[in-house]
Image (cartoon, rainbow, N blue to C red; front, side):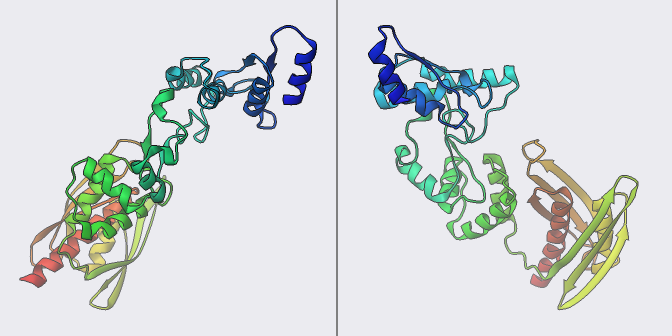
Length: 322
């Protein structure tokens, strides 16, 4: 491209414009090469929309001209807003990893990246997101380190003990293993759940759990519970998967235990939201007493079972301490 434009400029006396398509992923590079060779006009399109693989993306060309050459072509602070509007109007989504305007363009999750970002944003960013009307997003997920989690907790003014951080990291990464991103309120709930488990001895262990449910299928659950080194397996049907699981756990622990109360909250309201389940279980030890349990997770049924087991273990721990 540099050769072509250089040769053409020797033969013509009018301004040279270039119109590059992105068939080989070189539309931006070819446009910049043309400018270096003397072209004074670049054809570009917001979000790179255009025939085949698209045209040179306006946002990439404009930012490169400004950052590397000091050439101002458009109002850069409006780029993020315009790109999102064009995406909505055309129905063409913006790729998460698209430079400048992608959701991940200023997102940081890896522990070492976040640590560097907090010290100096230029460590991993060529320019600040505010330049193009975008926001920096330090997300929490399976690659996050303790440093970024601690920074987020401190920013939310959540007082969390340092010696419990390994437990928090383990719980958080178990939830984020499928790519789930954890927001502030979800992190606060997970941290609260870790602290809530204080002083509970898990002497009753859920070794196996299978539930079958669906349309025109009777919900059925099978569990294997280990208590005092002995394993008990039980199966039950119920009105739903949680009801079936509770009945199976009851039969495996003892015939008297009952679920007195169950409350389910979707923390953020999305389909991938972390759910928090609180339960009250009665008579786990066969003495008429009741204990509460709480758990957080992505799966409603598994989280409900975890909360039930937490309540049973809380009751056993309470009785042992008396």
